[in-house]
Image (tube, rainbow, N blue to C red):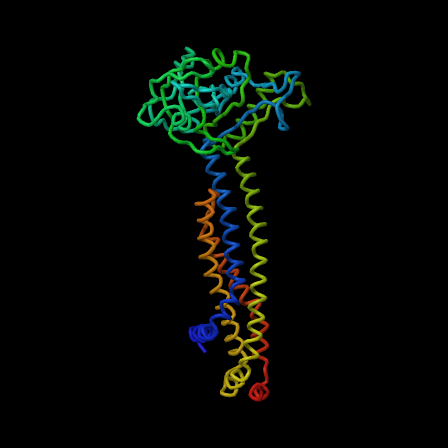
Length: 405
């Protein structure tokens, strides 16, 4: 019997008992749908992490105050160990394209009768270049603003929408930050969420010199220093040189622990993707248990089918069907059952993934690779759990099968 005829016979046998066939493949449907959803969640998380780090900029090294376990603490609480001079020293290193120190503080922004509690970041124009930000209106502050400690501010979309009603152009307006008047010179295009949580649009950016003089004090330490290497190949070297420069500037003795942390964002991305990949495999493995349960259901029904069709098997053998043909017939029937459940499960899994993204906002990504994996898994379940019933049918004695009642 040819392959197409085997599939046709298998399909006719399945259609002959539609309700039983539907109940049989239910376990496979649930299993495949679960695998698709779990893999989609894992791949979506990996893609989201990569996109967030890419949004931060390329070829990045992040320098933060305090050792890896947290910031240095003094008698009065957390103390930043990074200064603007540290950032300037790192900027002079070979292979460095841009350096953007950041000083962050909380403030109430006010315009007219509107107020909004937000974060104010004092930084340099290099930050916009590193992050490749687009200014939706106006401009970002420049080196002249930084040198002159100009009282200017660039608003994130969230702050602009919270303070200014529709129809009012924020550019040129005066907002007060901690009671100090700043002229709005630009509004950033929407940036979305941050890699470590938070809203990148809920921020007001001002020149670092202005923030130190008018808002935080000249002795205020930096929250971070973002360093962009000129080439991807130079990232590791820049990170190592930055650490050496900071140890020298901070007068740390050999063997003394760093009072700062240097992170290569490429390594952070690799670690995050590795963690997401492990979680994806774990979740998919848990979901695959449903496929095994579905396979057991297929095996049970196929054993029942062999018993019900014993006389049919005997007739086929009597007219010349070989044991191999009988084996192939029932094995194909098992695989068709499993694949039917697999295709239904893939459809439901893809729809469920879309619903999770639409209703809960969870990032999901249904890739062709996941669909192909689910198809192969469903076929494997059909072969594995269908082989025993098929072999049992093939080993029937024709005479005994014809006498079976």
